[in-house]
Image (tube, rainbow, N blue to C red):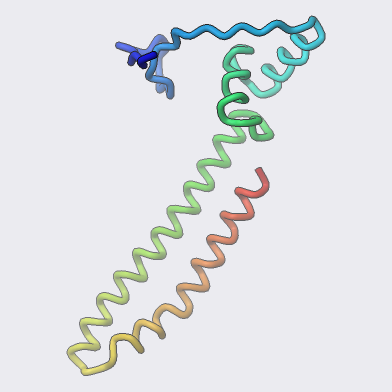
Length: 138
């Protein structure tokens, strides 16, 4: 069946799903199962049992914590990745500046790059290790 894009979303703000949901899936649950699903929905801050089941089925079990704490963790990881990118950009800028100067002076650019990268690579490795630890905690 073909996907149909929504003309406009039904709620204000950003909505991830841009496609109309026109396929119905029904499941039956005992009262105990329903109560468990209802409690998990509330505990994980979902608006409905359907949205909770949809996310678990499509993306795996939700991360621990509330949506707010998960959002804050994602922002922190994004910030960490931004710092790594910034470090790489600074390295590239420094190398480019020094290579131009070394060419003028007759210094071997490869030796210069090796010297410049030694300390910067250690910092990048440290940043990436921190990001990896943060991702593995989830």
